[in-house]
Image 1 (cartoon, rainbow, N blue to C red):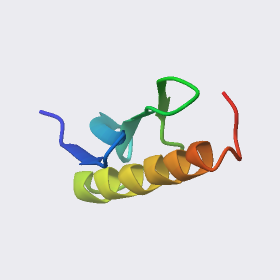
Image 2 (cartoon, rainbow, N blue to C red):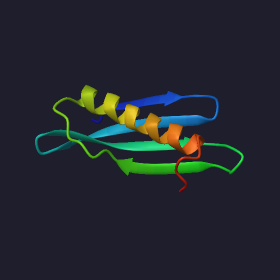
Image 3 (cartoon, one colour):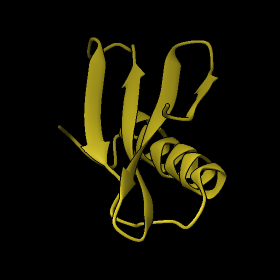
Image 4 (cartoon, one colour):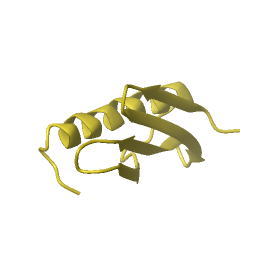
Length: 78
């Protein structure tokens, strides 16, 4: 069973789901938000492997929040 996490705001969401890998756990990160430019959705695998699932979820949520911040500030364009 995978451990999941989610944080949301008025028009954005970040969620993660863990999966077992050699040496620990990895996670998929899902980000999405609405805005003047339309709806944005992106999914990616976190680049790091963690020993515990809780570390994995928390760091995945942090990484997703960085993506939301960069996207909403129009620093990145995808």
